[in-house]
Length: 279
Image 1 (cartoon, one colour):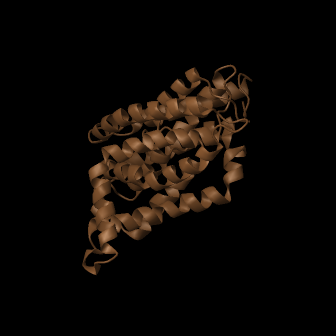
Image 2 (spheres, rainbow, N blue to C red):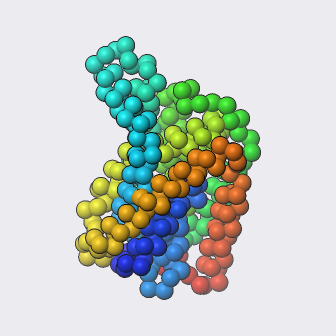
């Protein structure tokens, strides 16, 4: 059940979204857990979560603006100039389009389940732990050799299906795609960068679709939603800067441990009746 979001809640949710969207810890899980823990808040709903992600995704566009412009420009030119079709930026444009298809199709087919049953805190807790373990294994055995210039269509589709797992709160969009990249031999930096670029079409499409629900009965009002979106943009941009520097020198073990502890904490709260699955 969706609940209204006040100004304080909007500020907190915006901070959470900005802090966690790009880390492999699941922003939707944190927003879902916070709503359950604070009396009177409750689940802000899938629409609110999707719309405030527009803020963090705008931060991606700003941070990678040169790369994004090069991809768009070269991909467009390649439609009319066959000699450019094998250019890395032109191919990247097609790979992002192809990689977006899985989450678009699965999100459409399972929309009702995603917005209702899968928002259970049971799924959130289990996903945090389970996919955290998978991330830890992938990071431990990663070869960290391949760059994005070596990306091909089959691997782009693997990235895409990994991103689609983020439809389940607790999986993490960046965590799923980065894990797939590590298992395929890509460096941490390459996997993270492609994860961020790949998310752009899906997040903007989802957010702009769900924005139509904002202000409706039972949904958050426009004012708090705009505040949360703006906060998520500012905080998210700073997190991208930090995260890209972090992964160039260190591994993902701290995030794996954090996911396990958070997931175990959620399941413990459910077991002792402190919160309910759909609070």
